[in-house]
Image (cartoon, rainbow over all chains, first blue to last red):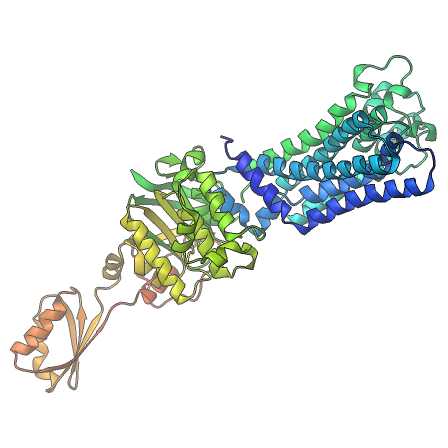
Length: 291
Length: 326
């Protein structure tokens, strides 16, 4: 029975709405967008609103995951440690309602924060640069919201699967470091060990498939398709892989016509994986555990 | 149908047996006190009834439904005041009650519920994070009462309450019981249980050491206590007159006082009448019941220990160790 999911989600959303942390995160996102727009308006000439819009993908690819992870990582485990989960489970909602209600509630929080940042971007684009690139804006905003809710799902999943706040934080920080700073080491590293050299620009399909599961490069690839100008992923590089490859999408690196799993739209599947897999694992563990 | 029934309910944490082979039946409509020192396994038992914790062996039913497989059928009909809970600090007291009403699909008036547990309209409008421990306890009690549950499960309901609050809580339990609600109530403080419960079960180190009415427990542990009679005359001459009364087990004399061990509570009046008939004046009567406190100490510290269990909670053995029930 899952009839209480929306009730729990609404309570979550309302609870989060009174959290200073949430408002700080919204202020951060909105502030970042504002500063970006004003700075470009002040320094650059002959820039269109569409170009500026693409430019803000650069800071968002780093900030959205951080904000979403902070919103989600305490979702379930926080209630477990404080004991409020007993009050909640003493009422009709069951564990399924809690995990998915919290997931929906926290995803809504992240989506709201990203949406507000984009509204500000649209308004500033109109005011400072005199045009409204609505189609770009809509697609870019939708991808950014998906990007944000994926990380929120990841964090809620982790928070459901562990028993202490510390573990949740360690796993969430670890995963963020993995995708931001260690990805090349864990993908190109083994490749280097096996083949004695780093992966070339036109690497084997299996390597390109594995490598594209980084949600940040996935985001920049997807956004690159809908905004003007190129969007580079901001990540740590170790020189194992050709530097030229860093800014290229899997489809561009594939010799010939890329199979479906290397095409740009496949990034949507990748982002959904980052949402679904941690939630499934966390849910399974939470169902079994003693509280 | 029993409101709560456990069969061989057991919970082990590694080598520690928190609840050991518990067989317990609580009938519909009764107020049952679940008594035991801290760490006896009361909360673990309650957590298993609510599916917070899964048993290592055995099973439990609540309102006829399996506590694990049919938990969703149980929760709408049960009001729960858990132990070691917390409120949502950012939400108001009123929002907590409203949330309980929404989830239970009940028609209660939030203000009426709040008033019933002693929270004012001003309190209700404040974030619950500002509440004292006692107010949090009241708020959670209010949430438990929403939807007129068939069964109230309260784990240490008096914790955090002042004596006045405890009396109010006891009145609330009584009024719920009068409307036919079964109440299952745990405590480590005897007098709180004694004041409201029809029957009590005593849990120690995970085992049920006694289940009975309070009177029944008193009797099984050594009759109805003692009665001390102070006479106007030297007591020695009246020893036989008192000793002949049915239900007086033993009489000792010192000066003008007679100390009688009472086997049957009705014998107390008989003793006074017998003395009056014998021609003396009773100046004073002091009656000492077996105190429940000592009864409790006897039950929880005494008894045989099958070994292999943690003895963290065991204090020095009491002098008397009668076998009351298994």
